[in-house]
Image (cartoon, rainbow, N blue to C red; front, side, top):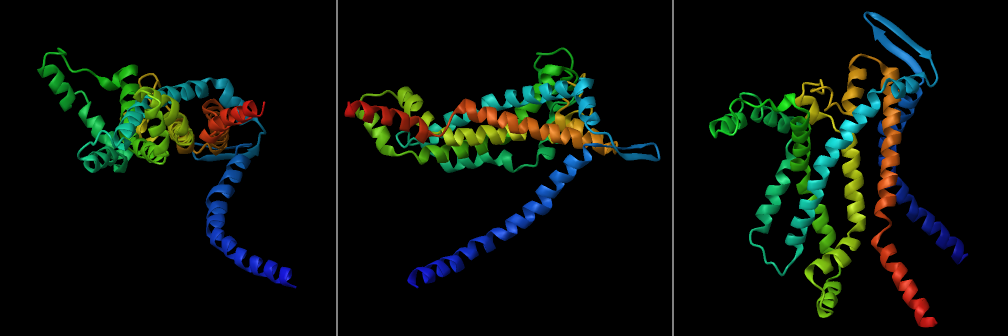
Length: 320
């Protein structure tokens, strides 16, 4: 009887967990799961507008997917997206690691830490569209950057930043770097502050240098946070849209070198080609999943895994 009463009490208590989860489940099903299933369903249909005439929806199977893959545009736009993401992410993660290490190291005793933390995080609070408009004005042919460069004698005439592939991609990458390095710094700093200080003290007693402490203790223990940062940044990079859209007016010029996959998707939605847009969305979903899995496998497991294996080997050696 007592066991039955305990089980009944546990069941009544556990129901509150399901009740609190219910709002999230409802929102997820309505705004995530149903649209995802609907997108996959529409990707198998020919459904577009030709002038004033609506074509479809007609079932075409995998024809939309075959068209996207064979036209050659998709690999080009995927390469553009990845290039601009990599150009912005590498300096972002390097600078964020340095700043996080400085801010979380009590021996440095940096003054004004709160002020600098606030300043580096502020660009993340600005809308990307407003940020893009600001850079478009600064780097336009008649903008202040060109006025400074010409006035200083560096250029004899204004340089058209948005007419060259390297400068356009560089500006997009630089803007993404500026907007997100503060958020990455805060995440990495939180991870570093969660590391047990006794590990650093033991390393100092053993005579380890600061670089050895960073590479052998800090970085391995930051694996979970680094994994989170890399995957979320990758997903955000694949969804890159607003910055290149505003800087290039939606054209992806020059020579479509700044056209991203989401801009390509937006063009299909704008032209009412819902079948192709659905197929492209599914392909983007698959690519995101595969790349996230690749990043996870490359970075490896958690810090507990990396430290657990040596500990197991040492225990086996002691037994022998």
